[in-house]
Image 1 (cartoon, helix red, strand yellow):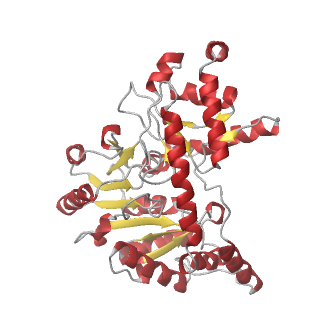
Image 2 (image 1 turned 30 degrees about the horizontal axis):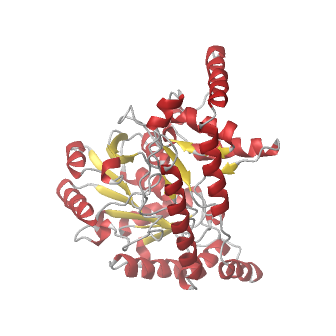
Image 3 (image 1 turned 60 degrees about the horizontal axis):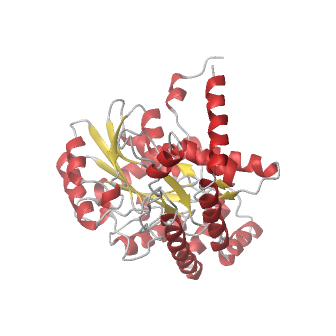
Length: 414
């Protein structure tokens, strides 16, 4: 049967493909330390789970309004108002099952065929996937290691054209842990006002910041009217499987995004919304403790990576990812790319990481290689992973056997 041509434009999130490899290897008895998936390892806080149980016991299992339970939308509005310093009305909030729908719906609602969308590279792969799927033109913006993985505003300015309809920003950033300086956000705000484009501000890691306070582009005059804030509960509250996210946007756009919810998901699960209300209004002790644990893990993994020959790693300012430059390690050991290194570490060292090919189109730094390691595991697992990486990369025979198998696979491919 013939499928729609648009499916050929749809990408994926490679982290889940690697997770499938990890699970397959584990099913065969392999001991794999997974530093590949962006998911807090800690459990959802007890008070949040109890709120979900109460909702179930009270039979709160039926449809809610497509844009979310009114009480929850008010709680989100109050929270965003207090954390971003902007007035937010509940009518400007749309609750969705996870963060991805806000990316999808925002692009569907704002981008016509041929419109240009500027997005960060490396970056969350769903940005590029959804731009292509909706018929937009993706315009990659390089994040520079020498800028602590932020971008050069001059370069952004050079990429803006009369077809630019949206700029996507993510701070703190996946996969690098970089944070966009406030002064650069201000300059982007001025560009948005001048050139009349939307800003999709992915702030899903806003609470996972190791110094200072999170900054949102929505704070600048005139930007609330042209900013779509993406946030949610997956990362902050260790609720990845609960699927609770939300967008904050101008009311007119929120109406249309609500209709997209009606046409796709009907609504977000009612009892998870009640749990999510408790997450925001209840004790934040679990969040504080989790971020402090991540801080210790961050320092541990960065120090360890920088001791491995051929690795060079900046200290991330937020999120929970280390993104070391492994160019020299690849050259030293004969790996053609970070993809080879990723596979070697998985199959030979028993450590799952993600190569830079997992994070969008690669138009820049063709001679540079990076991998992403998520440091949400226990410190014990991180220490063991570092030991395995260093040990395996010092075994020349192990590397040569792996490379021979890779070359044999390449020859066997039609």
